[in-house]
Length: 311
Ligand code: NAD
Ligand code: UDP
Image (cartoon, rainbow, N blue to C red; front, side, top):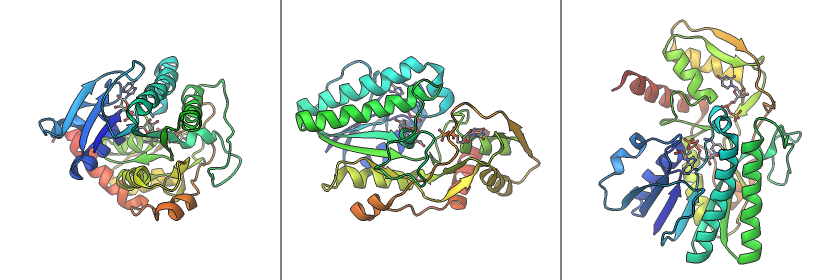
């Protein structure tokens, strides 16, 4: 198949490019390089089944493709808050442009939505039927509401135009190729520990997240895209739930060294807890994560040690 991946040079997108190329597909990677890097997909350049296109999803695009994975959007809070209006345009206009293309060429189109659509959840763990608790006017709203609007567009194109959609809600995912200065918690803690700096916990560290290793998530993406039973939304994530203090302790133990913990103010609207209910993914496609936190953290530490030493 010919597959378009928007945001294909980013953290998740580049792993998806790798897996699809390995399976023998043709991949068009479209990216504006806001948070993506050529280094992530450099090894694919020159492969006759791989094309790289510098383009912004807020401008229309046309390709003859069978599948579209829409991943374009900065995912880390400092990056999506850097230019919040652009973040909203990326989610909303990017969705409209992907859906318009899917409608024209009759492609199946996948939306990388997020657990952020649940906001600061009062239902725990989060099930797909939960409508969420999102602040519409806060610092995180450009991302949360942009992704919620994109989901609305996907379901309206599905109902009104019969577009073949798939919508996934991704919970915190980590692994090699995150940016060292990405600002997300796993990369921050690992880089700080390797550099012997103190680990910055925001708030008292009692807030929870559930961390999925990238390989598990990408397997879920591809399984969900090719199944015919449901269009979503479907949660994908690792249900193992940890406080930020527990995460810091795991990383300090694995890296060793002399870093300690330092406490910083909690950003506004920071969700207190997050854990996916993945029953739907298990029932629909027999998917569940295989890599547990300690093993995934070890692989990620190995990656950052190499990346930071320039080897
Ligand atoms: P990332 O920042 O590494 O990747 C995003 C990619 O999109 C980058 O390559 C960036 O350059 C590109 N991009 C951004 N704006 C663009 C635009 N206007 N036009 C074209 N390209 C643009 O983040 P990621 O972690 O790989 O996330 C990928 C997708 O998955 C995002 O849509 C994100 O919202 C979603 N997601 C990720 C997570 C996670 O934990 N990693 C969780 C929930 C949702
Ligand atoms: N966090 C932290 N220290 C950091 C970066 C983040 O304690 O250096 C916290 C952050 O406040 C949040 C959690 O870790 O409670 C996850 O943050 P991240 O930005 O990775 O993802 P999100 O908040 O979008 O789930």
